[in-house]
Image (cartoon, rainbow over all chains, first blue to last red; front, side, top):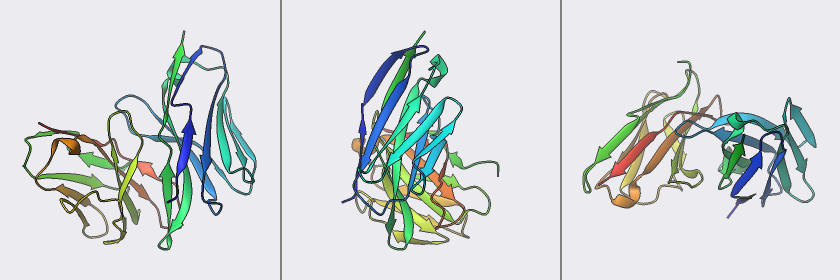
Length: 114
Length: 114
């Protein structure tokens, strides 16, 4: 079946450093790729997304890049802060039974140390 | 409402009992999704609703799990004869329409089966 692989599963950085999380997907028809941030005990919240007609999108300290040929996309966080500590999930859309469905990666636990 | 609302936020039950989890989506959202998130794991798709119908039940792990949605709004996920392996956070998400893949999540129900 369709799947999304996410790496690394855990990531530890010093405050101010950059963090990069990578995902690969299997369905070449996927055209929407969101990233969710989930703080401990909280709901997943959409932080950035990208559609297949662009290769990169940036929003302040976060950016996402997409390589459709290689079927992978990445989340980049610059100048990390302790409040960036959370679990990050990538996802890719697939068309299933006439509707769009999201397949999620297993998540990356990011720890930013002061 | 302002966001997706789930209740209860926490549920502790004994093995063998039935439980009902409730999701109230964002007003006007026609698409509704249920996911299961085991401790430290990713989001496992359970079921999708478009209006009151469930065209995709492929993720329900067994016939002990069922869900319904009435009036195109509130949805209830029922787990019968709960088992310890059912312990997880159950998340609900909604989208404005099936062609829109952006999903907005509730805070989840943490189910503990003793």
